Image (cartoon, rainbow, N blue to C red; front, top):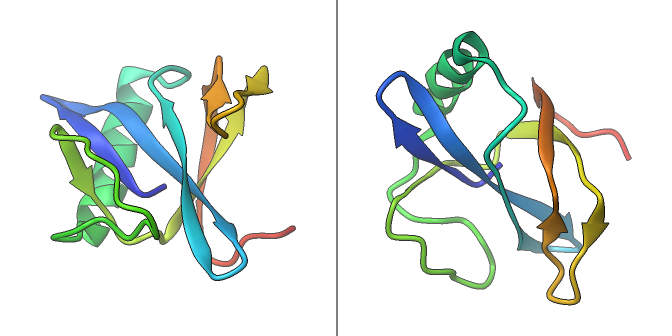
Length: 102
């Protein structure tokens, strides 16, 4: 995860990225798949890694974003990837921290 949109009790959406070689590439956002309790837990975790600027290789404009250090991984289910490389019909399935398995 590379950022999020705040809501009063947690997160409204998560901004996603993935490593491609040495690059961190934007993959879109996810705004569904969690409960109110899980949303608050995600927010609490992400608040510990807030960054003053985005870490993506190619800067994107997202005025409502709170950027984070890419320390957490989201397990995401999605239907397809668009021609622009963005996830389509994505849904959050879980959160993990640390080294990602390939």
